[in-house]
Image 1: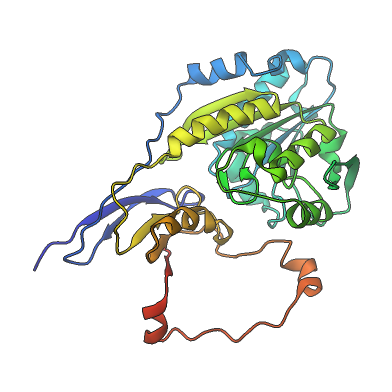
Image 2 (image 1 turned 180 degrees about the horizontal axis):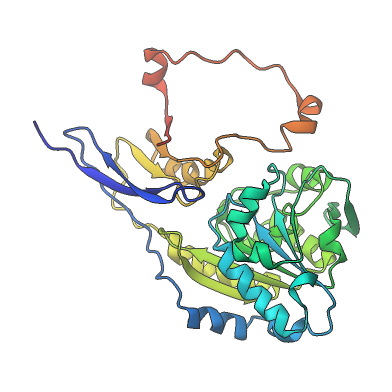
Length: 359
């Protein structure tokens, strides 16, 4: 019997990060195309990013005189090294004279479900225990503050606890995105800590895309950056992760400048050289964006380029596809009759183009 090729792939970024073996059927030959990636940053390189921010003073100087601060952190669906960076930001704020008990950590869930207490502790680690408050944002909560309307018409209503702080910092990962061209940065304000009405308008009324396009040419991106300015986001800590979920790039500074520089790093780290285009199947590993089923597009969109069936590998920490714009309290408002589920017959499988496997 012909021995099969074995693929060694990382899975489960958000709950049981590990390497799995995937034996291919005998006779199959797979060409493995890894991204260029970036090596993990040293502590010295992280320190350099914080000490030499883009377009603003270091946090330890810029936050002087502030009585309170808020640190916005993206949710578990993103591979951000949240604990490491949150602790580093808190150290900067301490140096500026803001004690731990006056620092709030707000998890920017956007329209996703709020994280549980256990998930928040796992996400933030020691920073969870140090902070004065930890809040998992709920887009349907009425506890919000109004900061005005963007030039595109988006009403900026954001988490009131975040709004009360004198100084604000965001921590996020920069990655290609279908609506905002690139995620991260100011996206921690809209949709991260926004009310559902803000998210609904921004997602449905402001033009988006293209995926991985130039940030400044994306109307959706410009709109959320304007919203972040209205809110008063002072500093954006933007990270780029490599294929092992390590911190491979870091920018700190004024939100638009920090994010723009991080996009340059992310383009290089994610660039995936591929020889030829004549393939029978694309196996797309969703890691490190495999925390829940709402992230599937991040692996499927680039796979579409090859015009052949795609097998997506994704090991979910949360298998639900909940998104507040389509489910929950808005579900009845948007409800439409749905066709009966299609039976998985052999005939259907012969015509299918997208398959999913979850270890």
